Length: 196
Image 1 (tube, helix red, strand yellow):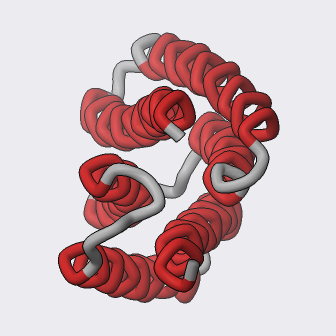
Image 2 (cartoon, helix red, strand yellow):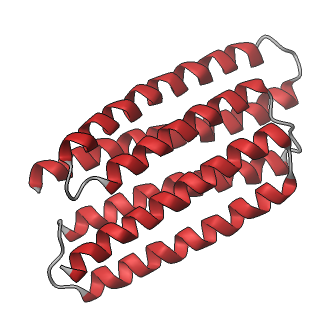
């Protein structure tokens, strides 16, 4: 039972870091406060440590509550969401961009997505119906992000500042990919439920 709690708690810890990083990204895009960007980098480091602990524990545990490869893969997907949050900040800084309203809107939707990912993952041990409900919400929000990004591209390509178009297009690509990963994580989590 101790081992069982350990893995679910580590996934919960990863999810908490994911939500924290996305909240900071959204606030950074709204305010441009560089302290928030630095905090995201720190959160990503903390999240990496949690994942390392999970992998170490996985390697030393004979019996796991769910398939060890499934645990590893789900943890990796959560980690990728956090990584793309940091990548988005890195590129906003690199390109010296002040995030526009479209970027702020997309990060707000991503923040809502990560909240539902958190609820899905943290209920997987005991409440599969909640997991399914939350996964459906994540998948609906992924479609919303896709529509928002397409709308943002349409606005971008109406302009003639090609440097700005290129820079923003890269940011939107990363944000859209973040939503894709969250959607994929929910598909994978639903597959895990079938095996439990």
